[in-house]
Image 1: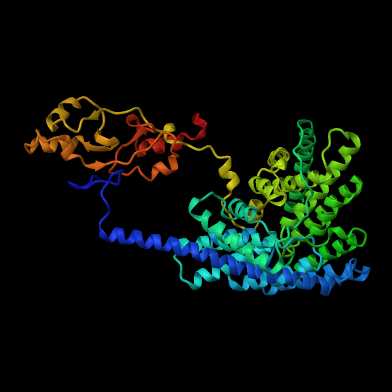
Image 2 (image 1 turned 120 degrees about the horizontal axis):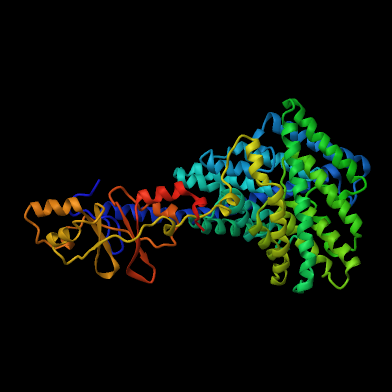
Length: 584
């Protein structure tokens, strides 16, 4: 299919679009500006909701466990048991979508339900997670806060009748704001939402995400104060010898993370396969297990941030820290596998802190000249378990950096996190949240899969340059010059690095009409877009149209230099050939 005479495709230097299209562009720009303002308001309301959520958790903790520093034995046993029973009953009969952490449910809203999260789910998540976390279950408030923020944003987007494309992105704004307000770290929240909720890097949504997260944190600071979650001593740069110790922590952390993920993925579907009426009893049994362990080790209850503070500033033996890490693994797996509403964010950090502290203490005893300060091991361990458990390596690095505000810890964190991530990936191919989604009957996009995919580029598909026509030569001259040349469509290199093209059939028709002396410049059929060899083939596919048989591939430093041509057939052939064909 070719355009009619005088029609030209989009290209550099093309004339401005006609009035209706210019108006459409202005409306689209106005919608972009509105979306930025909307992101700020989403952040404010999500932040307010998370403030109420944190207060509700504290209220539930006082009501169930009492206000004493150490609850009595009866309270310690009964509180998580009754909280699990109550939360499980509410989930079974009233709020089925409040089950679990809320990360995959929010992600499913983006990719399955056109951005829709029922407001009843927000209410259910608020109530059940407050009961569970406040009652002592080994879960955290961050993941539920993410879903609560996403649900509020979804309700606001539906109320404003946003377009479907915008509405699909709206829950991610609330998710970033909710997580930022709960964890007091906007950068961590944005990166986590990109890695685990959106599942891909997208420039248009990044600005609104940042605005929403910062707004949520600002509201949280206004009501709860701007104090960091942990008081961290000064961090000094690690010596090259100390990096060996952090590498050992990464190896052990990766194996520890694999053990946790395997346990959850093994237990969760088997418990869910039991009759539905048993689910409140499962949650109560998980609470009873936590209560029994907490009689001796209360550090395993709740989110566990107080325990991290004690390890950061205390003097625990490595044996005790190792036991606490193992017990936190068991209690978190029990609560999460039983479907108790609550998140993995905080328990993962607690496990990492305990494990890091244990490794630091042990290595200090064995190799006193090799080991750095214990609080650095605690912090690095937190990031290590996060990278191994949740497989969000970018988030794990920036999270520790945001907590400490010290770049001296970056290298130890990167060394340990990378090793833990690779070990986790070696023994558990798919990330935890991806497998959980499949267990729930969903197939959601994964940023990790994208990270490890081979990217095909234009240079992997383009062909050698074809014969070029000069814009000043006549139609008759051009026909005689391409008489034996293969192909039907020929490129024309115009002034200023612009490219156009004309078909052999059109040239022949013009000659037959007696217009053989017309200049090629005056009869070209299309003004063509330009590609460069390093462009991703996926984006190039959008420019290859049926009426553009070939698209020029030009040098980035010389727009008049043609390095190849690309057609639809070339793109399809490259995809059929795939990575096995030798692409980098």
